[in-house]
Length: 303
Image (cartoon, rainbow, N blue to C red; front, side, top):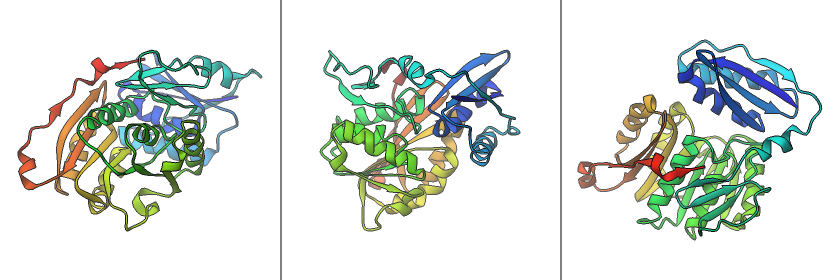
């Protein structure tokens, strides 16, 4: 097992955690003096180019110089097993996300999602993922989407959650083939693989052009989110909802501006710590006067 660690300012810690998660089986964050140390755990020596790119993207988003990573080899121990034992089930709204070593069904009737995100980001512990789960839970009380798109599916947690809420057909895409493979495994483990169509590719180019969606989920960073706004608008049906996440609160205005320019209106927001998730709707012009719902998300999240 190898570790990759960087020391960064506290306000940049979330971005670097997101940057390392696709490259590692687990990522930890701890206070290191006046800053934070972000440590990723890998089963092999990291590819230098991929690591350099991931850190550069996070640094650009944080407005700082890329930190120099410290790469070290740990003693021969089954660190993956030890690490997995440290992840208890996560409860978010009606969802109960658990690893394979917590196979007992939830006693309170929650919607169980069995997940081992060992190759891709998306274990249900990050605020950006939890924000989307909160948004899905709220949408399930008033919407019945039949066609759903999950952009940047990661481990497939959001596509699986949507499949367990609605009898919908779901398209899920990711630029990383390892993420798509992990999503396929997780979807099969949750009994929803038949309704999730998986594709490798960036943005909406991986999705058949004739498809129009009632719900789009995008848990990625602000720059690709903003750039995708025109393409997303072209691919959604009237009345469709779009859930945006992976946003620091400082990024909220940029993301909102991009989607409001496409005629979408903000209907709900879910702040969790430094992160925020937004639900927007493509509706009639009169809807533009509606006030967004403020959701007190932290009170509904328990780990």
